[in-house]
Amino acid sequence: MHLGKITAKYIIPLGIFIFIALFIIGIKFFVIKVGVDQVGVRTLVWSVNRGIVPKDYGPGWHRALTGIDQWDLYDITVQTLELAKEPSHLGHDERKEISLRTADDYNVEVDMIVKYQIKRGETWRLRQDIGVGERYKIIVENETRDIARSVLGQMVERDLYNPDEKRKRAEESRTQLTERLKPRHVDVIDVLISEMRFDPQLDRKIKNIKLAELDNVLNKSKTLAAEQRGITQTIDADTEALAQKIGGDKERTITVLDAETTKRTIELLAEADKYLVEKKAEGDLYKQERKAEGNLLIKQSQAEGERLRREALAGLGGDIIVAMEAARNINLADVNISSLDLNLLDVDEMATRLGVSDTKGKLRVDPKTFKQIQEMLNQPKGTDTTKSK
Image 1 (cartoon, helix red, strand yellow):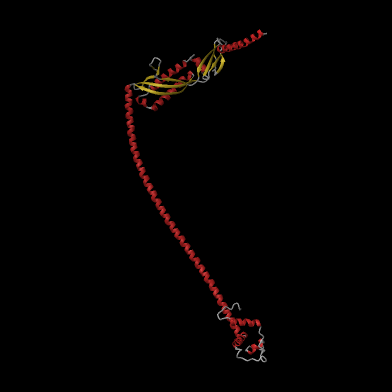
Image 2 (image 1 turned 60 degrees about the vertical axis):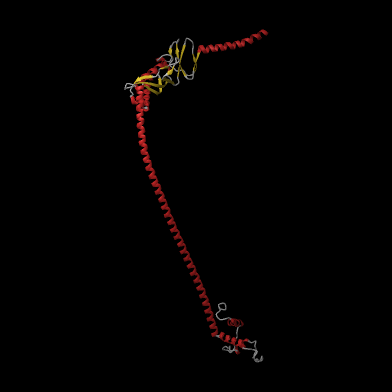
C-alpha cells in the first residue's frame, strides 16, 4: 500500500514531463510557425504530387513533417533598398551608391532609396520562378542600378541641381522599375533620389552657376521690390487721397444734413407758430362772437323789457304807475283824511281816487299784478327786466 503511493507520486510528474517533451519534439519536427510579418511557401518533398503548393500560407501554425514538407518563409512587409555609402566593420565606407556618367560626360554618384513589397498571393510564384532565399532582393538591386544609369544618365549639367528635374527623373525610374519587376512578382512602392555627388570640377561649376542664378534672382527681387515699393507708394497716395475725399464728403454730407435739419426745424416751428396763431385767432373770434351774441341778447332783453315797460305805461299799467307815484308822493303828515269818506284799505277805491279808472268806473286790480308793477317802479333805470318779464 505504501509502495503504491510512492509509485503514483513519481509517475504523475514523469508523465507530465514526457508529454511536454513530446509536445516540444512535435512542434520542432511536425509543425512550423509563420510570423505575422511573413508568408510561408510549402514544398512537398515526398508525396504523390511533389513540388511547390500553389498557395501562400499566412501567419499561424502549419504542418511541417520532416522529410515530407519543406518550408520557405518570406518577408511580406514593405522593404527598403538603400543604395548609398555605408560604414563597414573594417573602418571604411562600403560603396553601394550608383555611379553614372551624365549626357555631357560628368561623373556623378547617386544615393537612391527604393521601397518595394512582394505581391500578395504570389509569393509561391516568386519561389517557383526565382528560387529560394533572398535572390529576389539581388534582382531588385540590379534592376534599380540599371534603370538609374539609363534614366539619370540622360541628365545634363543644369538638371543636376534642379529639384523638379530630380523628382521627375525619380518618378520615371519608379515607372520603369515597376514594369521590370512586375513579372518578378514584386510591387514598387516609391523611388527617392536622396543625394547627388559630383566631381570637384563640376561641383565648382555648379556652385558658380547657382551663385549666378542666385544673383540674378536677387537682382530680380530687388527690381520687383522697387516696383512694389512704387506700387505701394502709389496705393498709399491713392488711399490717402481717397480717405481725404471720403472725409470731405462726410463733412459736406454732415453740413448738408445739419442745414436740412435746421431748415426743417424752422419750418416745423413756423408751422407750429402759424397753427398756434390760427387757433388763437379762431379762439378769439369764437370768444368775440360768443361775447357779441351775449351782448346782443342782453340788448335785446333790455329792449324787450323797455318795450314791455312802455306798453305797460301806455295802457292800464300806466295809470296804475301814475297813481302809485302820486300815492308815493303824498305826505300823510300834512293831509287830513276822513276815514268815513275814504277807506284806505279798499285798493280799488284808492286807485280810482288817484286817477285809475275803467270803462265801468270801477277797477279790480290783482294784488300780484300790483306787486309786480311796484317792483318795476322800484328798480333803477338801465337794469335787466328779463326776469320781471
